Image (cartoon, rainbow, N blue to C red; front, side, top):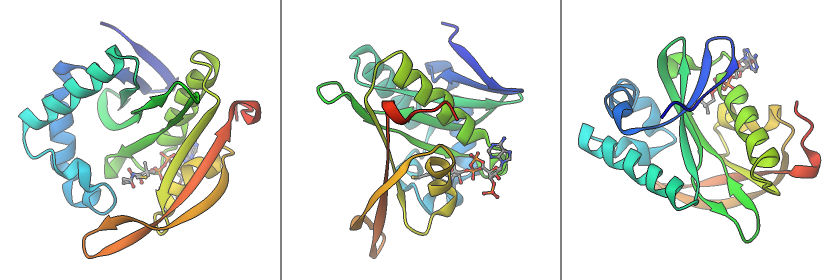
Length: 182
Ligand SMILES: CC(C)(COP(=O)(O)OP(=O)(O)OC[C@H]1O[C@@H](n2cnc3c(N)ncnc32)[C@H](O)[C@@H]1OP(=O)(O)O)[C@@H](O)C(=O)NCCC(=O)NCCS
């Protein structure tokens, strides 16, 4: 299946498929320590087999109309992942999650990828509300919704267990009516 969307020069979004498992595993291996700081769930992918399972699950989710996960390619290399992993159709809302390999930060790749994804969610899927949650103390992650015009709606105090402590989680929301194609 060829499902590629170019959102900036050299930057593409593609559906993550089975044959991407090796590339995904290599990216996680290179970034394990860095990802562990904020996304321990991706550190769990300790083998190629586990990466294959993650892709299989995301494709099953897509087939069930429940959400989807995309890879971000930069100049031909897999750079990260972005997705709306679960779509709540009853309320027409979803949450967007993401990560990039460390060396792919600082180029506007995630902001551009999220802009394209959100545009699709609002324009094509007629989603009403998109949410992004980021830990307080992760300014790079919070910078993405801030650049895209999300409103900070509040902070969920000590909402996520992490090692021996709890993280405060900032909730950012954007409504279809507010989307200005920034
Ligand atoms: C969160 C994460 C994806 C953000 O990456 P990022 O590179 O800061 O975000 P973007 O790709 O949107 O790039 C924005 C940066 O590029 C710069 N930039 C360059 N060209 C740009 C452009 N055309 N558009 C927007 N920003 C641009 C911005 O100034 C910004 O840099 P700054 O923060 O130094 O000012 C990344 O840090 C990450 O994966 N972290 C680890 C995992 C994680 O925390 N995931 C989120 C969990 S909620």
